[in-house]
Length: 272
Ligand code: ADP
Image (cartoon, rainbow, N blue to C red):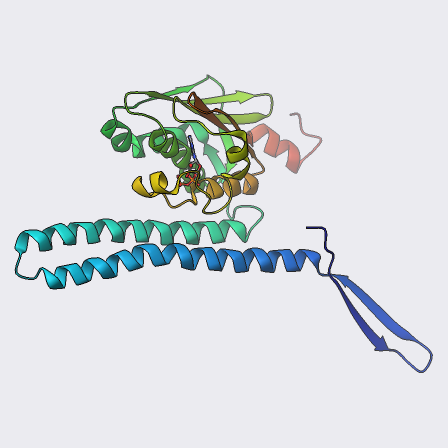
């Protein structure tokens, strides 16, 4: 979108002079459009589980005399409620991340430990499809400056996607390494893979290659948008290699942190 919005304000200073203020409103307009699109998408996405809950509540009413059916519908209501709660949580996380360029109260965080937590949290999901998740780390320091919960969430989103978009009985590897000045986390699966055109779009909010599959796995379509913003807010980046039918690798990279370096930043004459 190459359109440029200019705001012009003219204020007379005296009989001979006027002040002309020209303001570039392009950025403000883009932010406003993004916000409006988000609200439209969010209301659309919320309608699905809310509509589902209403239908299930009606079904419970109609089946009042059939205890077995009531129990079945109640179970499905519980599932829908969990999905709704996840969606609301992710919407809140994402809007917080979008509203900031950095993370508040960043601390030194060991990405290796985040990876352990993230794989632990996805273990039941992986086991339910007999998918093995292997975690490896090199001997270097994996400390970055950031928010431990957000970094763990980003890794967990990549690992749970790897599970959800892979056939049963396959393998996922999570590798944490430090290279030069960066710590990298790579998640590789033997899953369905992505076309180049889809790789371009998967970080957009609510974009799903196969909406039915995403819904079946309880996906919200926000996982990768959150990953993208966590990377951006930590001064990092994300890259993807993928081949349909073969598998995918998602790699996040963050600048590594060391006590010596922080000391050096605070006092540039101190030895690095
Ligand atoms: P969802 O909740 O739908 O998983 P995400 O934002 O996490 O949302 O991912 C967006 C879409 O990207 C998914 O719906 C899926 O089509 C695709 N995708 C994500 N990770 C993978 C992967 N590891 N392999 C294949 N496709 C993937």
